[in-house]
Image (cartoon, rainbow, N blue to C red; front, side, top):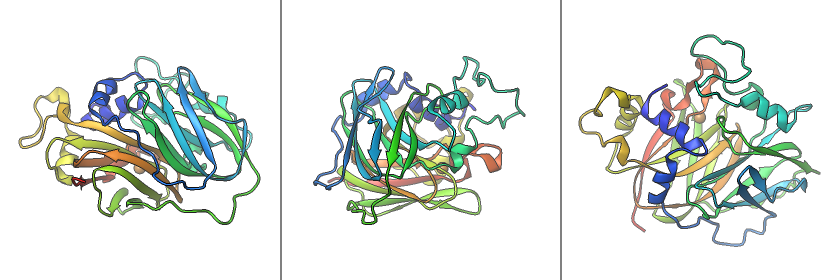
Length: 313
Ligand SMILES: [Cu+2]
């Protein structure tokens, strides 16, 4: 797939892509929850070959996850492993991808619909996570860790890294809710999936509630546009093939877009709260999780793309 945003998404999600260049333009300010939430906390650091600070075992509950690292970018996410599956099963199921883009060890698949994501990943519990795009940036999310065995992983299908973690006990019945400045709802539509952004977004420190009310997992890729942009224009850019020359008239050049934030994948019927720090301007959010019921077309092409403005603080 050579379409611009899809390529960008792939770069964004690969460990050593040109995102480092973009990142220099992203806000270096750390994003965190302002108030003491009185939640148990996990402090996780991205290391060269995985994660540090992940406990072997922890009790079920709603957690404040603080994540940082010295790499140009880092992503942490949690995937509950179905009974009998291990972290190695996850790693071998999704990678590695060879230079020509074929999945190693995957049997020759039907054209276009080669499964990149194992089926169980669509069904299992994935509470969400956090991502940074500036070395040393400290980011936070609030997620529910239900009891079970997990892979703590980097949400990356090209260069997957994962470590095991077991969550014990039962979910407490009384879970404190962070106060959100705005909500992004992930919805099922007739065409596929959609985002709905509710609330006023102002520049600076934000708490964003992300609610997956649909029946497949979703993530949120934030793209900052150099100019005001409509959903239609964003969709045009999404369909634009850069090898075909200049973008459609009236649209900014793809190089002028930056990628300031990413909210890692979360499964159906989950809510996470992400602390973000956004500059004022025009934003596009899109989801590139593939829809296995529609020949693995990324959700964005089914309409899971939305535009909004972040006002001056
Ligand atoms: Cu999606």
